[in-house]
Each structure stands twice: as C-alpha cells, then as structure tokens.
Length: 106
Image (cartoon, rainbow, N blue to C red; front, side, top):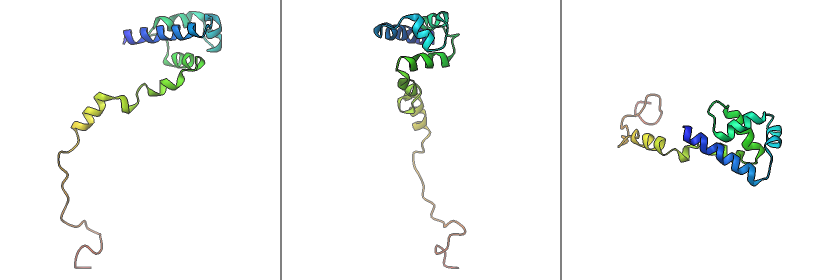
C-alpha cells in the first residue's frame, strides 16, 4: 500500500509540475495547506482520501478516480465469482404450485 500511495503522490506532483502550477496555488485551489499538499506529494497514508480526490479534481484528473475499484478491472473478484457459478443448472420438471395451466386438475 505504501508503494502505491508514494507512486500516486509522485504522479500528482508530476501532474502539477507539467501544468506549471505552484504549490501555493494548488493548495489554495484545493482548500488545503501547503504542508498537506507536501504530504500528498510524498504519498503520506495519513492524508484523507478526500484530499487526494480534491487535488485530482483540481488537476482535472478526477474521472480516473471512478475507475479505481471498477468491477471490470477486478480480476481477483471476477475469478472468485466465476468459481462460485454452478457447473450445471437443472431444470425442474415438476410444476410450481399456483401456476395455472400446468396441471390437469384446474
């Protein structure tokens, strides 16, 4: 987890630099202190996810945040779900009670 946060922080720093946005300006736009932005750019796990999301929004990158836990990219979850699927589905030959027209008594 620490490595992923560190990478995210470095990516945020690089995005800020590519946009030539000074630390003070980005911090102001995200309504956080420069110290908090510094922690984000270092990947500090003590910073809230909301702060990371706000900074990504300010940088115009918030749309990627929606894909973080997208089920289509969850290979482990998809494999586990596939394991739980039945191998064979049996069709019941007996009519269910209360279904008209299936039995000769009604």
